[in-house]
Length: 214
Image (cartoon, rainbow, N blue to C red; front, side, top):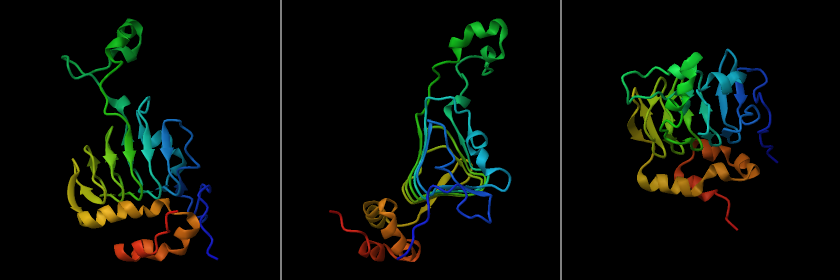
């Protein structure tokens, strides 16, 4: 019987320490990552929380689904990076201390876009940047070097700065079927049995091997 991979192992490829599964790595209560989503970095992939999730002072959350692939240098800019823009200066004087700190109310409660949410089976190319509050749909691809400032549709391919929709990977009917099949929610034993179909089969073939819902 085929044996599923282990989602609790930090380094799923023992000979490639540059690859880490994020779920067993992340400790912040503000970050949620699904099983098998990984980050690849030749320097220090275990520093993902501090080097790749930036200005994360809360309360906004970063949610990443299952089976996502994050290339080296992928970064999530969180709402803590926000500055006031309604006055003559954007400089955060109260953070510098001294009597300036008496005006801390000027930099609290700045408007935010809410949680940053990444769906399942999303592929991020090298050096992609995701801005605060963005929603990235299931099955999407974010090209290397992209700066994602707006929501990305399910199975959309985006690229550029700011990232624009290049095309969708499937037509609307196929996308709807894929979302209904939701292979990322299959039991691991069943998924393991049909990995080849998930990776290289057609939508019809994937639907044909989907587990029956009780």
